[in-house]
Image 1: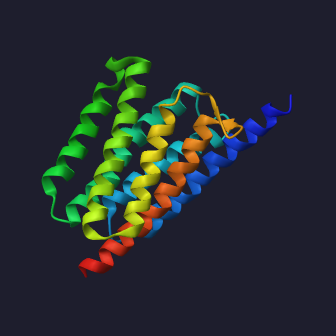
Image 2 (image 1 turned 90 degrees about the vertical axis):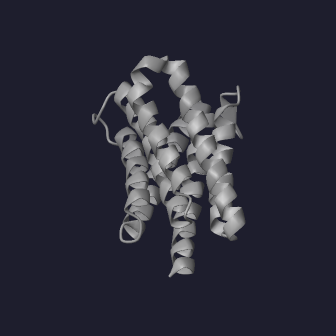
Image 3 (image 1 turned 180 degrees about the horizontal axis):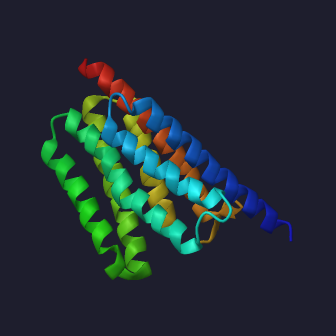
Length: 192
């Protein structure tokens, strides 16, 4: 009986952390980067739907997480690429996310899971590449944490470090979002 309450509390705390970090990042980046702010806001809303009782069914929460992944994360990477002049990669990431969002009903649960993890890893790798070439330390940490969340979600185990795997992934996403918010701020300061 003891592991169940720990899992419930860790789930609530991980959703709360991701929601608060994402909402803060959305508010702090809205003036400089509306695309990234929209991506952060999608993450915050997806996390909030699971925290408010009676707000939606389990399927609605999964749909919100799907949208936050396939549209929200490419929006975050879009601005990072756009400011650095890599407009083709920015458009490709965002366009690919939009196509996946539309095709989500036809993929099935396993297909959606694999596509979401692929989007997370592609966004993490592209952010990491741009951050390395521009010397943006926060971007490197953000890309590494987003990548860690993507890789952890592919593991077969249900629990990591005595916590549910999904909670650890949300903590990694929250840390990545926090670092990425600072990366955007640092990037804007470099280009001004």
